[in-house]
Image (tube, rainbow, N blue to C red):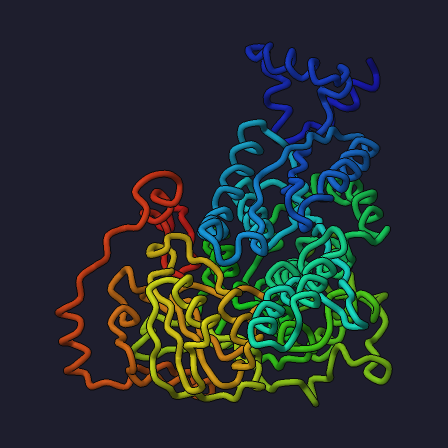
Length: 569
């Protein structure tokens, strides 16, 4: 009884309100049914949510991490309750109707976490995401609950290997383009597919999952090294094994995500991701996270950072290396310490360790540039500005997002080849109907038009595989995979479904893309453009039933983060 009295004094903020109530006997009765004992009733309850499911290597190992986290929580005199939320495999749905559900799944993930945590009155949360949309979805749900929380990244996959070359998921897509032009045999093509993904973990380059994971670590929402620790590394289990002591400290100090996620920490997240050459999807998700956290941080703020932060990461898709190579040189913290020492990060930001960012990095060694080629110095960067560019112009008066590595050049002008679906564009590329100098236009694939704003890894991979990477450009109101490279512009706003200028482009129109002046222009007169606007007829919605129909009615534009939550609260 004495131990129970001590536990009662701890008084968890949320679960204790139900335990204390004599009018809720069913609550206690059902807790007893889960197997907990009377002393456990007075312990803090921690929800442990993972995006575990067996059908995707990014997610198939997350349940074991969740179980390890639960053991750590229980050892620290708390009660862990595991639950799961959904996931969608971007790689497996790429180029199919299933990809329409990828971005919308972010909202389902956030909604489900908010629902379970608030309904069950959990006192804290551990989130364990794997694939791309898992990460922002988990964070957005956590922000809404206003409970102390820590995210454990599921970790990146090891590289595959074939004929002495490293492989990753993008290798499989590009191999099809190579086979199509006779560069590799069918046997080589099949072997690349078989060897590309050797086990668990998210896609290995600086694609969307790893971009967001490194961003979250810089944001302060994961423990140090979480983003660069591979999925099958024993240290990933060690991270889970010590999570209980950290979440307990957050509960004691009442450190909630909104105390960690500030404009300064968002800038830290963006800075690290831009420096490493991260995915264009970073823009969508950062905007959505800021909207959820009620922070005043918009696409113009992102543009300022992309102009300021050099790219120093020699990482795929445009570079050579993978996340496993970052782990080998000392992990994400060694890069963060370098950026902090150079004045590009704010070290005063609070993190889930309960310490400031600069305190977390105190014991981290300085990066060496003499024995590794993964990270360049800021004084001799791979590119003076970040790959991500925010473009404006008559095609995108409310903004568009480009990823320009510089290898393709910085300006492109060509004649439009117009497609009203991704499938049409893919067929044209595979049937060798795209020629040097073309600007491929894929439209009606935006958040409302598709609906769901699918990623375009197939067409860009086919372009690269066909040897057209520096000879054509591609623009779309859809978005790109983190694995995309080439001269590409996405997120064009307003989208075609809303009557944007991209809907008015005609075959053989001249389109100019200038990544130096950050402009994207349809080269026609204002009078001709006005006449086309008058003649425009809005397309009927493609989906009339189910979740995508509801999503298309609620979703905001790409320049506002594609969120469905009421933004006028």
